[in-house]
Image 1 (cartoon, helix red, strand yellow):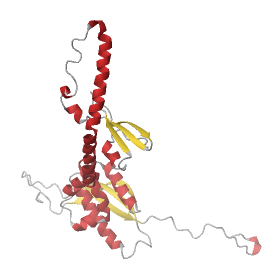
Image 2 (cartoon, helix red, strand yellow):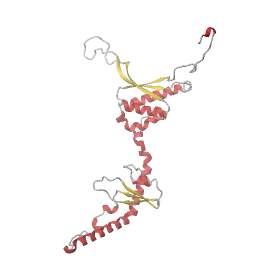
Image 3 (tube, helix red, strand yellow):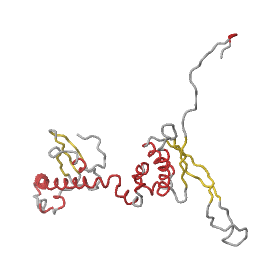
Image 4 (cartoon, helix red, strand yellow):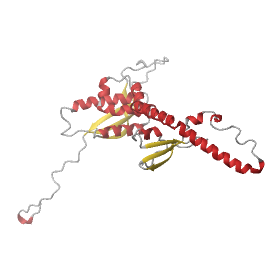
Length: 291
């Protein structure tokens, strides 16, 4: 018996988890405001889950006159109008019940087809896999095999929302590095940059367009310290790690940073201060000298 079902779950999800014969579906029709959840009510009877679903049956899409007299409430005798009205209501309810039962096998078959289609396309839609492939179409095979970029690819469908938001970028990078057992610490700082190809000529005259404005400028940089360096890790694989981080830096800059914004990763040695021993040793020399 499922409990605490999400409000937006639909019947196709349950159909994929229950074997045939252990789940029975009854379509109850749509609410006039379409505010019902897809699954209205669940009840377990003799180890079978009965589910009432807020969807229309084939019966609901067909003309009313195919199942009910359209003049049912016309020309009722005035002296027995109340009794005859209630009688007609009961007859109509019985006709509705029989109509639902008649179309139930077809309705359930259609639901199963929906569930089968959902199961086939779920691997493509889960995590926006198709969008990931479209957005990351220009990535090289080396980038796709990068262990850090692999963890960032699922964020590609949201790159428009993340781009330029340093808080989201920090959370994203922190999650990725934590998956690899590494810790990072963000720090925004001003750095000096030199333009290797200055836009203006180096001349001190007043000609418009040739005024020298300098080739050095300062800019706020998103910088992250990576706590990596240790005797065990700083071996032959360290240079490969540097290449991986540089490839990651360029990937994040291309997809998640604002235009012309810079990003740096600083690898730091993060270990406790060196101490010889935490214990105290006493040595007594002549003249009761205590060291």
